[in-house]
Image (cartoon, rainbow, N blue to C red; front, side, top):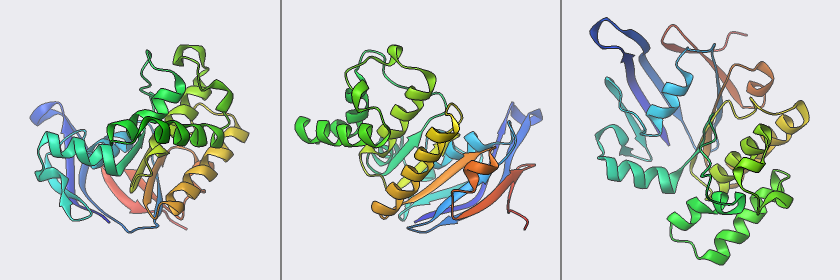
Length: 223
């Protein structure tokens, strides 16, 4: 479903720092991959490239046969909206919308009726333990609660590909375990695939396989 070939990215011009160097990656439907790496290793950069939020210096990314690296901005936006669920490290909740409206937003953007979008948002907020916070504003939530809302929003439209950037970084151990289970179950239920990037060995252990990102390269984890 996802095919990445020769992906490279540098920052700072010709004398800058190379973050990714010739990354190859394949992901089939049903795959759930964890990528571990230290802070600054390029984990977030890799997810941003796969999601089409940034463009690589070299290489190709194809999702279900559509080459994102050759697509225009509008096409990449449509693909993100319909096919990709992104759990951002910084949440990116809209402050003027309620929690429920934030979760329903991807569905509304994809053309879902208000009632159906609200019902799915309620379902996902219940799944992350926040049904009672549906009418709150994001500013009324704790960091951990905002993280859970962001995860509910990323999963609400049943995306083909889930990209999760340190999704348990603001959660306690019990909440983290609940969220990791939810991610795995939703990926399976939607016949999709997922990539979790994390520095946490415990979080990575929830995935089917683990790879390590270091020195710009991606390799299978050693036994």
